[in-house]
Length: 125
Image 1 (tube, rainbow, N blue to C red):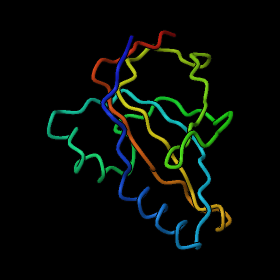
Image 2 (image 1 turned 60 degrees about the vertical axis):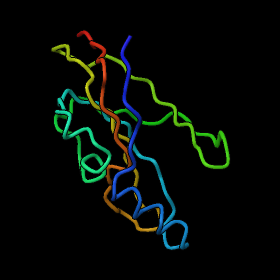
Image 3 (image 1 turned 180 degrees about the vertical axis):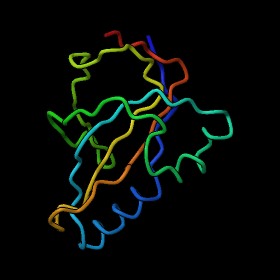
Image 4 (image 1 turned 45 degrees about the vertical axis):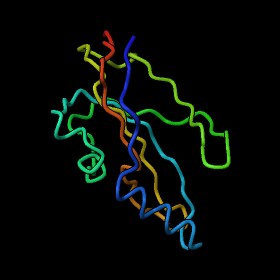
């Protein structure tokens, strides 16, 4: 079973959250994306991950099937990872949560948070 280091909110995610707190944005979580990009120790630091704007090696994107507040400071997002369209298996090394400002029609989603694998899971074809 795979395991991940703690997820890190990116700078773009923090900006979107700040805008939402100021009332100028409504956060809409748009997708959970997986990839097989690998990260050296220096790239796994909080500071380095905060600077990320995308996954290193995107493989798949999944829509959220639900969300719920789980605490005063936490939201649980649900998405089903499948191998339905996977032709060549890969190790899930990185997972990104993408979000956009729903108050702006057509706004581009940003990498809101990222988690990288300590021990990656293999997703077979």
